[in-house]
Image 1: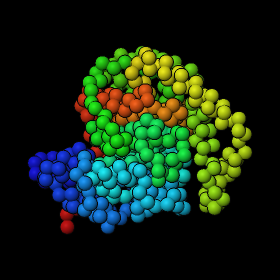
Image 2 (image 1 turned 60 degrees about the horizontal axis):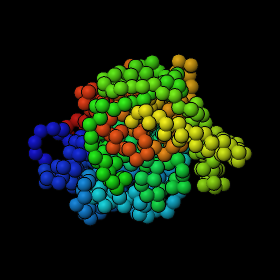
Image 3 (image 1 turned 60 degrees about the vertical axis):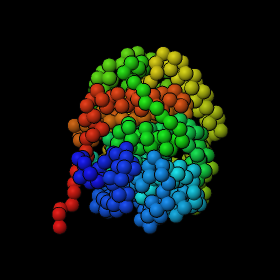
Image 4 (image 1 turned 30 degrees about the vertical axis):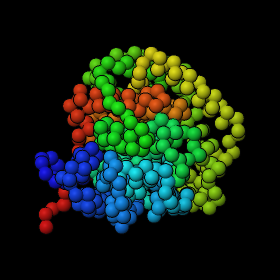
Length: 451
């Protein structure tokens, strides 16, 4: 590779890796070898990659077509079938047969090389990533803290510069939440944007796949590959960006509140305040929908393998009356109408992605103005509305907390308007001098001592 820039090829952005390979400046075989070397060096403390096959990756590289990601290493969440591995959803049991999932085909046809399967919160059912059959996933900013869930392995792998891009899925925030914890950019695509064959949660009316990358430019490129459509760039300096004070700007860590408001102020957007009828019920509606959709896929053997608390919770959930699902769907319909009305007054909505930084793995509890709390309720409150409505949402880094952990702003847009979110994210990157998206976590700064 010629020219100036990072000394290690995997420190290049996704765009730069693809461009350098296409120009003949970077040998994809060298990049693949360097990627596996870095995974071996850095991942033992993070536990972000739970499976990888160098032999299969070499086969993919040898057969890679001349697509937009030819020869570029990527990672895939443990929810998609691969020809050499069945997905497990962070559990010890295979959840679907191995084979060519629709997601695998999109990556393969773009020329990408799958180098690993990423750690996933058990059954994809949590926002911390500290429960998995493969052990907890750590955070590249502080390995003792949670990497997030359920796509925590994908977020941590990108944050630690193991790969420049990873596939995540988002049923209640599971792309955006770990992206916020790990200081990367995560985009939940519009519902139905990606194929669901070979996806373990393909039954879900809530789930959507999404790209997880370092910045909006990489996310745009990877999002085009995953969604199979162009996401053209445009100027976002003149947007109207609505904020909904209640409940999304309530009971937040003060530093996160301040960082998000500072980013919005720097953007120079018109920022009207809005109310969303039914927003106070979005969290419980999200939990009910996710729970009741997922229960039919759990067998007796899987239930017996779960941790005692998880097993007890599922047995309790099996007693839920059917009317709870109907109540959740009434809230869902109300929220869709409320969002449609809101987007007549603004192009984008904005609020913090998570109410507090990533908690410790040993004690996954966050501190809020209201007191200590488990992270899931607040996280789902912030993110679930996009899943109920099917609309796209993006999490972008906007600073570092005094604890040394990332803080993030979330943006939402109408159905199919991923490009608008990416435009807005790139605008914030520009007005903040890219200092947040270019920040390098401690895990990614360490290099092995020369021999």
